[in-house]
Length: 218
Image (cartoon, rainbow, N blue to C red; front, side):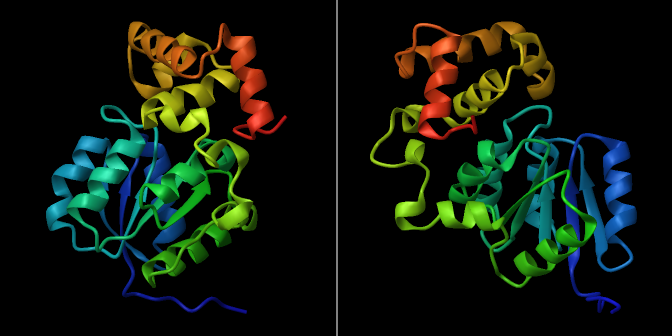
């Protein structure tokens, strides 16, 4: 069955990789209109007040301000504009915080094309788009243990939480710095803050904590 196009859905893309933006444009444009592109968090925030679109597709890892910080500011500046986060990070690591910060949906970049198109349509209509697993975590007692009952992870800032997820995923401080466009010294500072706030003696203990609390899958 042929999918019915909705020419009224216009989209802005915020991603720092030109090749990815081009690929996303070729995937989306048969049905929807790409009306703006931004290559950094600052760039999308600069044009946000005048954006004439119905959905923003936002990458989390771009130069400058952290993705969650950009998301929060975008929601503050344009509370009327749905944001669909399209990230390379597994949804277990970031989806909950993105939705909590105001995103209307979360998809990984490994998602199927049809899923992306459906997600765009749903958030443009004012709905929420997440996987069934994340949806369960967003309701009542189904929230993951690490986000319930004042868990220590709630003490972390969004950037600290982002660094935590990358650390327990096995990435080095240098690799995290490259991914987040920050210096090794800055990432080392975040690493130290995470260990201090969670009262962890070392990275091994941090990984055990993350698995036991459900921050990451074992």
